[in-house]
Image 1 (cartoon, rainbow, N blue to C red):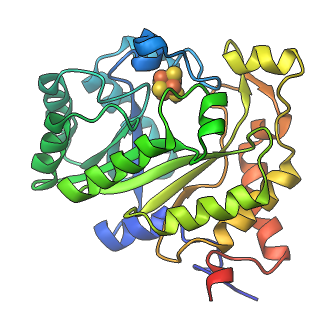
Image 2 (tube, helix red, strand yellow):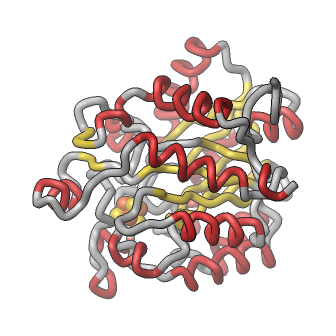
Length: 310
Ligand code: SF4
């Protein structure tokens, strides 16, 4: 039986891109900053437990390339690999609003110089949003597509503390409401499942909270262990056990069944960009296999996004 969206058990972000741009859209991940409040140790903050030295950048070498070169290089690679025609520049690594407004503006202008770039996506954290940043996003929203992905990760303060995020759940709420009430940018959140002590009730509450938010999309990650991260030390000491694939699939199922059908899903799980950086769990290394496992898991259970809401 075919259920969901073109046979998929969830509403993929590609649907939104097709509706909006009439084409398949590919993200070009770039690095334009080299730090964040946590890494700088502001107010006693520490590096997030899961964060690698590249600040979650997709391409390690991008840290030594200027923005124009990064876009040119990765656009070409993606174009050849997927026959891609339209792109979004994705300011991905570290905290992209942790810089001067003039620098942000210059980055946006550079991104829009490329004819096949139809807009950009900015990744940032909830406590790095000045009025100047919001005004700038709104200004660019008038002339191109602007999306913001906020690293919420969890709505539970004990989980945020474990991850050493350095912000609270309330900070995330305030940030999301501030962005949605003062700008018209496309808004999404990143969430991480597989926290120590996490329960089904946590996932259900997270889904309810997500449904009440003015967001368009979610990106799901499992909390995995990368080399040279604080989490690696906790893992080696036996203080952190990564979630098993089956249990993670159950979490994803529960979450998807309880979120609104109009929320687009960017991704179902985290994947290590660098094959030699992953410590655990091993299943995270198999990107396509894990993705297919999650799809099959949902299909076998006749599960689909918003099933419990209908
Ligand atoms: S996840 Fe983001 S905020 Fe946390 S240490 Fe890494 S770059 Fe900084």
